[in-house]
Length: 260
Image (cartoon, rainbow, N blue to C red; front, side):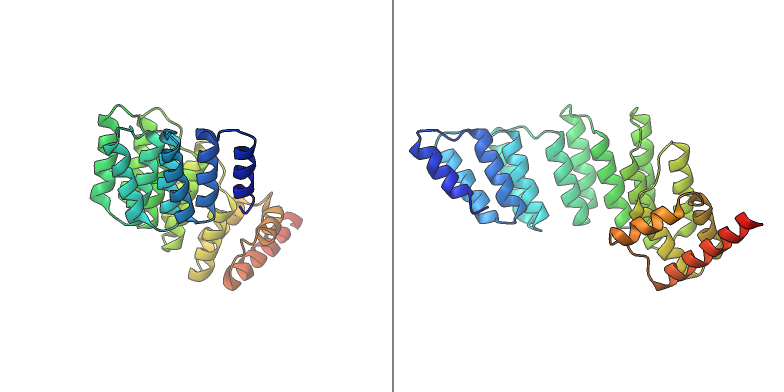
């Protein structure tokens, strides 16, 4: 990040005028390091040099403020974007829907989803995945399932990320049966769960000592469980003590089953 200023000075000395793309990259870089003041200073400098921002510029500014927990400022930028005549795109709405969801502003989430469509912008797979994720994290599972069904009715195929978010949300709230059902539907759609989803299931079952459900997951993992367990450890996605004990017990059980 410290190299940005020297690069800018060198460009100036060589009479190379920074363009919109350069400023967008610079704003994005500052945003990723949560240097929001520098990001806004870059934006102001961009305007002072007569370079018009585009939708990417606004999206980057809004998103980096959301990522830094400055949802209030992100919303101000969203309104400013519209006031200055720039039209939000699907990505803009996706960012703001996620922001409102994290704040549990459910009426605003639904209002924004409606406005998006009324402006001729069709929700994409990211939109629906975001909705399933934010609803699932807050335990609003009926809304999450409704969004999953809307995805299908819109002619889109649910993503692995969508199912993984739902499985993880169920498991973290101890809803093991619902998590297993979501896993079955996911498999029926030809998709595979990721490590986080499996780890959440294992931890939930380990905590509740629900052997039946635990072995249902172990049966699914029968052929690949050693590799998955090792990958969990290496990736830092570590099952807790009870889950590790149950997983090792399950492994011994499966080995005995194979021998017999």
